[in-house]
Length: 280
Ligand code: MG
Image (cartoon, rainbow, N blue to C red; front, side):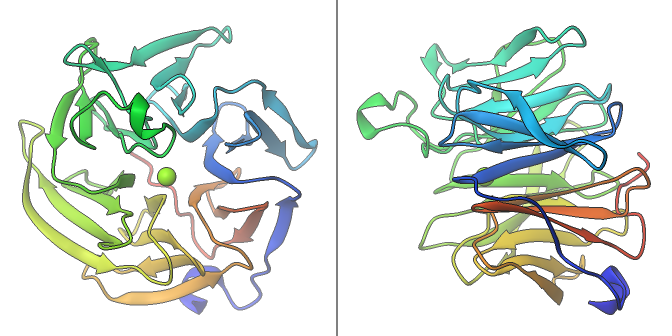
């Protein structure tokens, strides 16, 4: 890991005592991290200067978070089964909550492409079997200015974390079922459809969940033992080990050199050797 984390990298617990942390995202305009505690129905903010504070409660059991091209917060709300955007004045806009007239399962994680399209996964982790209205667990694309998401992949068992390569030519999506526990990789066409489906990496122990790609195209994928880092050719570079199961991660910090990991009760920070955030 020396080439990624540096020889003197230390893990710093920046938040602890939580129930199940998820959805870390760096808000560049505010210079702080936001993350979710799903069962606590709360979102927290953290900054170097102010530490941890409540960002939103209730949070509708928000899970994954990301930002759009304008730095606005995008949240996957388990409780309300929708994807929302937080505006500059704090108001929330519902971006997606149904497909084909039926409620979504429980949007899990999302990413925004450079053209403004929003891509998100919809497994049923946040609902009971009786509450389910959709026939499957899809990966959706929501085009800018539209309200009806389009399924782009329909054969996942449990689609979960997702992210694009720096040039957005590739999309990585975790399949978190016990049987599959792998990451699939697709080529993104000019029409924003997906092709060349392949299994990029099998993840163990436990399951793949949230993930990010750094500026060098390396995949940082969460697993039962921490964050596992893969080269674009699929070779495992190394791992950032955490004491509890890691569910998501993101890059951030003022200079983009910090990795934040949500790992069950805690959130960890480790400084990387190079800026990991893509400039695009
Ligand atoms: Mg997830």
